[in-house]
Amino acid sequence: MAETLTYDPSNDTTTLNEEGLTPEEQDSLQVGEEMAKKEGELLAGKYKDAEELEKAYVELQKSLERKVMKLAKQLGTPNLLTQKKELKKRKKLRKILQQLP
Image (tube, rainbow, N blue to C red; front, side, top):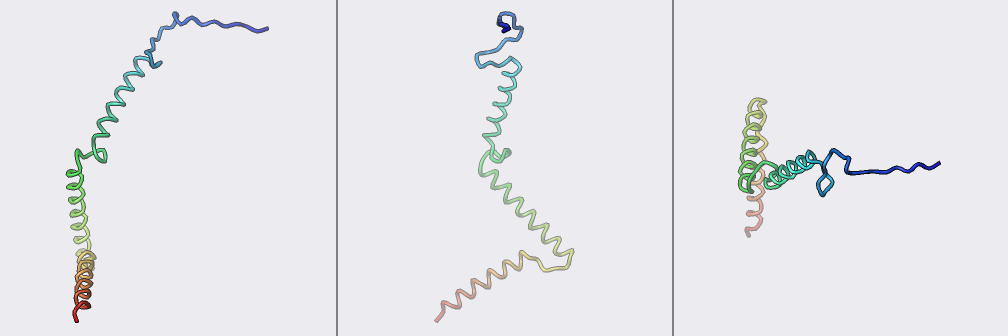
């Protein structure tokens, strides 16, 4: 035997907005959208513009170079960065010498 069920929405105690969300869900959605908007305005979630990001990158690069140089001194090994620069200078010099008659 089939039983018929009926639903009367006037008995609901939770009010839903036009999107079908409770007030608590609507508030959470609004907070989330505001956070996403603020995060979207920042580069890498941290920097206001490209200049700030570039400045931070350069500072990080310098910091890493200092650490590498310090570690190389502690280990008594030649500095890899200095070696790399020397190789570039030698390559440039070779190119110049090859162009001479």
